Length: 190
Length: 190
DNA sequence: TACTTTTCTTAACCTACATCAACTTCCTCC
DNA sequence: GGAGGAAGTTGATGTAGGTTAAGAAAAGTA
Image (cartoon, rainbow over all chains, first blue to last red):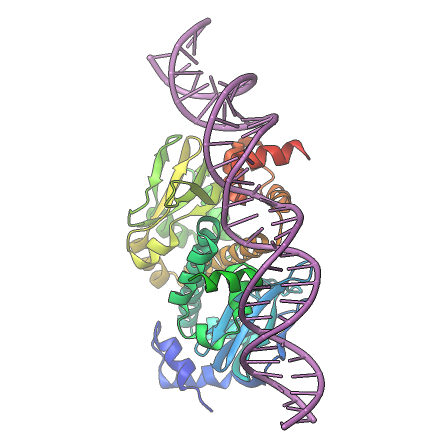
């Protein structure tokens, strides 16, 4: 099993002894999500955090007009969950779909809580992880309020340089908050 | 010193012994921010988390056209900081101004880190706090992408029922992401 | 290979919201 | 308590980006 990636991801913020690594990896489950399959659907209760080891996920919501809005992409080495649902254990609003055949490692909420108690360093790790997500989310909020679509696209390119080439551009359009048509027009002018 | 409020705020998520309470409150500093005064300015390095015990703060950024965008309000019993700057200890982008004469309790980043080591429960507390902020921030992102200004205003009213009456409406307009002029027109039609 | 489905492009027209400007009402502070 | 600034209103006009639609290109499927 390829746990190197997730252990390195964690090692960026906390140091684990071999024993602790074993406890942690023992809690993980592997799952494959084929292209276009859903890992999580609108209305589900989110019971796991997912860590992507291959492929790419996208998290999106669907508004009352049926339009999709991409909240986040999770390429290799990223975490994904419906935070609202994971925390509250109520039905969530997020859909998570694989953009290509994707491998994830699952950590259940239950195990995550056991981890917090047995190895408090994990509380630190996830706090830092969530803090960084919050900063990114707030920055995106500010960008949405103060930048034009073109500027937001440039930001996107800087922040996800790898994704620009692999992602269908309608997904990028949705992420920066414009229609595919407008996005296409915008790009042809650049 | 009125530490009851902040201790109750914390007691919502973790239980502290009297000794731990003493350690914690010993780390706090009181500060008064008069109406229209700034607690934090664009470019400052944020060295504290602030907890509001009286009054109300607003956090906002200023874009390249000089337009202000409100990121958050912090009435009594709320926390405020420039998360980006607090985490990275680099110059931030947030301005924090008192909307009325305001009392805050300050916890320095240094003390916060000492707290994490001495009383690991605080790591839990702040993780939960940040998780909730993240959920709120993501919800606001989704709302910005999928709702009209009017719907966002209704959401705002539900989420901050007390603030609607005390806040100048240009601040609400800025929070929901429209100009004061449009906001005024919108309200007269409701 | 051909067939289907999805994605991308282009064009004409539309709308939610912005901008500018002038006026009124409300605070606030001397 | 009154003067001056800030906040709110209202109207005319402007624009970024949406909608609809239809065809072209690309990618998945068999």
